[in-house]
Length: 79
Image (cartoon, rainbow, N blue to C red; front, side, top):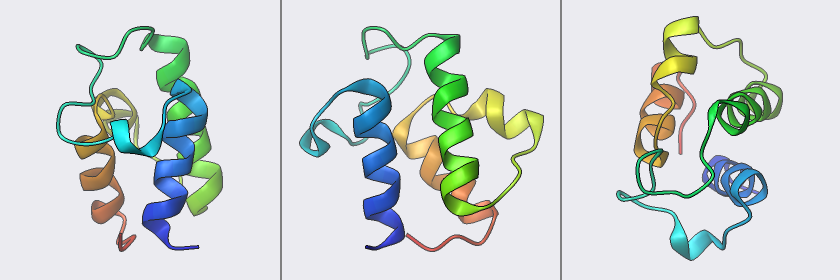
């Protein structure tokens, strides 16, 4: 399983969506039910899956699929 598959799996699980829904428009403003609890669940799953500890700023910035990808790149996780 690739790192991208892992990230997609996290988003699909947390937001109960199909991977086809993920992309540039998938963010906290357009996804119904994206609240602080789901965002915390998302970042916690990212930390556990990729064995990293996100900075508090990164946790706050993880407000879209694209931002999550950029944050992982910052931690040298190749997608």
